[in-house]
Picture 1: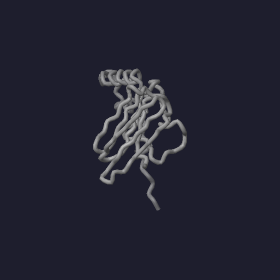
Picture 2: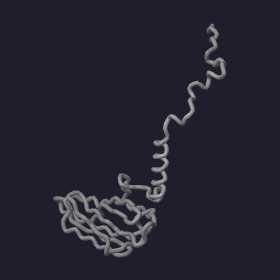
Picture 3: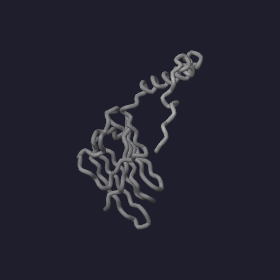
Picture 4: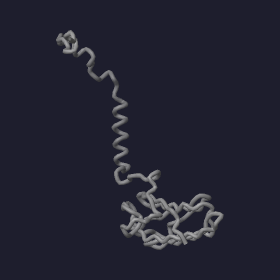
Length: 159
């Protein structure tokens, strides 16, 4: 049996794992509170895949689900402790050669809260509502002081 290649990403309340196996059959996914077991048969060669992942944090096994497509099997793992970031998928820090981060779906959710976004929206709205009538006219500022610009002086001829 071979481990299936997989990509993962973290969200505030859940973790997603996508096992990249085409034309999978006999898909079996078992969720435990601290691990996930995945197995299937894929392709025309009927290659058997099996992955056991000891998870970084605990999940709600009853709320976790999986979905099979022609190209992959996506697992939705509901975190037991929502709002806690997972720096990695696995319990151990050891690198798994079959596992990578799904940067296409990765989102640094710790930095953007709804409160911060609403403050940004208020600021943008305030800036849009400011009319040009209240702003001072800066175009004629130099007219008050009739001083010559340094770049108005004639340059000496080159020898």
